[in-house]
Image 1 (cartoon, rainbow, N blue to C red):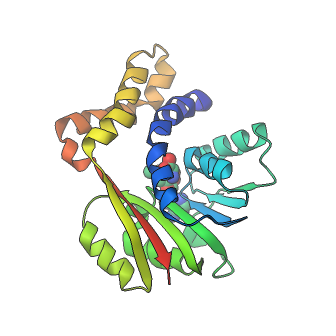
Image 2: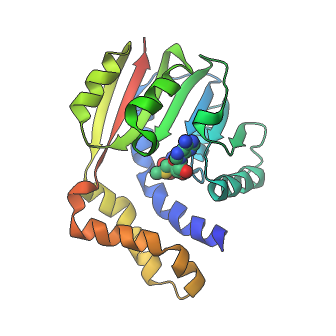
Length: 216
Ligand SMILES: C[S@@+](CC[C@H](N)C(=O)[O-])C[C@H]1O[C@@H](n2cnc3c(N)ncnc32)[C@H](O)[C@@H]1O
């Protein structure tokens, strides 16, 4: 059941990957990087990172069902030597500082708080290396100012408006949910259905921005 649930959502989530690819195209090529995917979920972006980069990825999420699903995918794809999946909160892990060449935080900072999450993650990034954040759109200018006041440069930022979210995610999810007959699965998908209703009521809440950042 969980797998089917993740398959439906992951399949729709994939249409947004082109925006991650756009963000990645802004940073220089890094050979054999050590990457942190924080708040990796069931790993749609994680597996894209593994296709693009020849290095190693540590994928962390506090949600056990999501990390269990990603662990299965990693095993099926024979990527266990390159992707380590960790089921913990970022704030409960002791890292050696400044070890990562690239940190990806998609949908993570808006969950834990932009400044709190940013400070914790910045310590883990090597100098002259890169941080890609995908966050809710709110306070975009203030966030850029905050990032740049912490010895970082925002190389680029771009917006995903509500149209992008509808065409590349919610439309697909609505179609998948409406074609479902399985009542158990529909129970799992109920929060997503509520999210779609909220989207239809006020889509202006549903936009986001990527920030491509270099630590100086
Ligand atoms: C919006 S989802 C994004 C999932 C994935 N990055 C993606 O873009 O498809 C945010 C994820 O952050 C995770 N998360 C929230 N707080 C966390 C924490 N303290 N440590 C690690 N993961 C956390 C949630 O469990 C959730 O899977």
